[in-house]
Length: 496
Ligand SMILES: Nc1ncnc2c1ncn2[C@@H]1O[C@H](COP(=O)(O)OP(=O)(O)O)[C@@H](O)[C@H]1O
Ligand SMILES: O=P(O)(O)OC[C@H](O)CO
Image 1 (cartoon, rainbow, N blue to C red):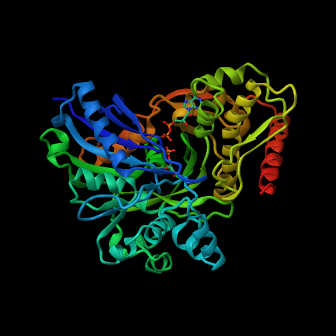
Image 2: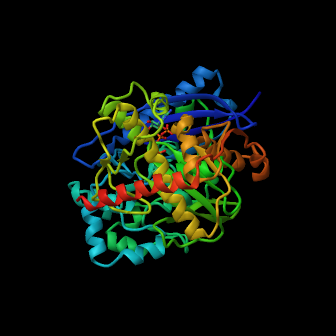
């Protein structure tokens, strides 16, 4: 009986269940979108129960559509949109408020207060992050401060906190496991990435009771078994978990120090493996835990871009310029350049390296001759410019000059974007055969825990290239284009 690993990839806009075989190939995918709630400008929320429902639906879908039986699943790996915060009642299992999504800005007031009180360095030195509404800590505080009765219940030990990995493991295990992994814990603003413990001083400042927090575990370990009714009578080990960006780093087999990947999804996240060394950034990058494996943890440097593929969604749904995201490539190729148009998609502020919560998007260089083609091309190019900002910071912090960049995520199917990216970075951009690297990483972590795969060497040997995009642009053109982007960003930041 052939066995498979089931990976559950719970992303910002959809949930996916993917079956992988021993060769690391996708056997079948089932995907389901769920509702995005925007209760106020800049706020983004999800219904945690709807997320759970979507995960159950894709599990059922992937099994029935592929004809794979539950007993053929050797283990389950979980990967998730990170930082998104769920607080629920231990007894009833019901969330006390919507999940506050990583993109949501509703805690920027709390963040400003913390910064005014001079806490930035304290948080940065302990967590590798900085005070920003992006991370979970202030989202938990917001729920405890704003939901009637929540703080008292939390203090009585009746509420639990979790990022989406924790929520799903708790649900899948029938409430028996309240756990997270190192990579997810490192995104909360409450976890000390050096001592590898929840940090009492930071919890005190944020007013979060320690009793709410999950136990932090390695990324590859059997945490619990599924309760039988979710898997048609079978208990299956939940054997691995990692935040989606760290999972993609693992799925891209970036195991050596200095190897990096960039994922172009809703946002865009570049991570560089820094091995057992935590590198402190001087250029607005985050220091984060890559994973816990083989009895130790490894670190990564991260550049976080909040709006990437979602800018293409905006062209499609907001401006109705596109029927689907894929058409952006044809429009962009119809013109030679943007004719000087720049789109700065700072819809929810800017992340690395600017970290400005209050800035909002802007467009520059419009003329009477500007067409839809120029506009679409400029929006696509903004993904590449933001990536160049991040890579420049990463090379400066790590003193490593990148030789190639491995890429993945929905938007890398856009060949125009990949060509432009390579030109702008002046390095080859490598797209792997398996583009579902986020899900693959969690599958590998789970598979290692249950002996489905033997070693990281075996995994690294499975990585295969689909296409390499080589740089062709002159230095002069690159400098001129990038100079224009820098001016556009600085003008955008000045307009507040
Ligand atoms: N061919 C394409 N060109 C540009 N953007 C694309 C293309 N295909 C998908 N996208 C964008 O990629 C994103 C989906 O990627 P995905 O990796 O599934 O995201 P997530 O995991 O964040 O939900 C969407 O925001 C979509 O607009
Ligand atoms: O859902 P994605 O793939 O855009 O990933 C979101 C990130 O984990 C946010 O930190």
